Image 1 (cartoon, each protein chain N blue to C red):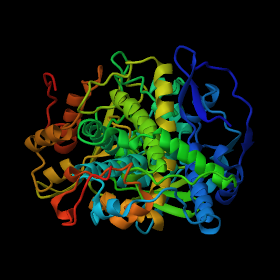
Image 2: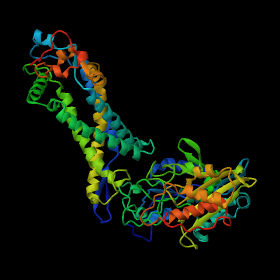
Image 3: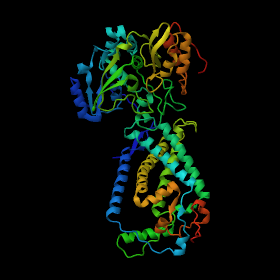
Image 4: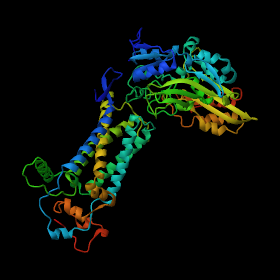
Length: 288
Length: 342
């Protein structure tokens, strides 16, 4: 069983043309199996989360009732990207599983929206947001190691609370970057093969074999995104993650949740980051 | 690439004698079964080694699928009725000669004696890149070799092309659309009756098929309603060689007049897109107008709106404009116009 489909090009060369479409079902099934296993683990095996360190009362008192987490612009980007990503996945894969409709135009329009929003996000995150907040740091790695060792029963200190984003968020973001940029770069080039308003059509821009691998990468990243999106939605709906999901809608988290899961020393809420509606009279201060 | 061989690769030949047996065999053999009607399209694929089915189900012995029957609501033509029988049948010649004309215009007498009406409407695309076995979109690949700067695309699509630019080559299809025919298809889930225009599929919906037929489906008959009888018909086919050839373009219309005005019209063209096109916007525009050269001129101009020529087929735009004009106004009323450019 080959995970790629091959063909003989006019020059007599064996070239890949795209992924084998059963990988759609494989990605879907893998994601479903993962979330069943995860849900069972949380339900039957996972204990109460344990953290090392405590937050000083004066530090806790300085945390506002509503801690700003995502700006309006960041939230708008997230939901626009989500809408375009879902449109891309449905238009790409529904026809492959028997739901037939005119998908190509919808697909490249959604792809254009995604590309534009990701370019905007890169610029916005680089210059207006805390760029490094979403990337794993050494503390994340050390704490992840501690969690893993404790899972296997070893006597090691409990991990510290998270910074602004848990390591799982950061890992998901990294996976989305890899898969998303793969589909975006290959997708933009593939638009040279169809009629759009952007480029003059040029199917001979690359050799058949280059095009073939491009379609393969686009397909692999695409089916990868099926699994990533399913798991993302699953975690977004889990009860213990709802404060995080809610923050992507309303923009803030409650002080209780922040103090429970996040370390004010690692996630510094500065006065400038708190909108006036979330200010509390009782002294907001730099928790660092 | 295509290599013509003298003999076909081995396959299991199954020859049912009834429709029920044919259905049973289709279920038994699954998606690997190849349905053989007249064989004019099939034998090309098989001898070129481009299709290698494990089993071929030859329907030539199924008498239920042959012949023209009078029904309470018109006529029913068995899918295995030969084009010669369609063209010569008295009922069709008398009431639905719009179908007799294209049936008589298909290929040569020898081919018409063997080819069937079901095969004619269900045949595959004739794009030579596709037929030669190149890995194009229609063959499951990721490119259209005809829609390239140097692609040989003189016979290809000017309308509704999406990635693939192959055209539907059927002569009888536009006539059946103009006659408001219904296609009866046996599927694993039961019988489906599909309007003629919905029987055909464009590359926007499925780039690897020209019809709605999926593996295991069987077109059994074509029904033409009595309401289509008595209309004023027009059919014209343009081809490179008058002796026998696929259409460069064909047009069919069925018009009911009220006085000198067009009361009802159904108009379809083929060989301009991957599926025969019913020109509904043209039908709406000419309804209520006199059947005249001016109306034909307007209809012709409207028909080609949105047409996008490829490197070598821009001639199809004035050709379609003229054929639609003549299909509305009649050959005498509508003079052939040489348009400069588009």
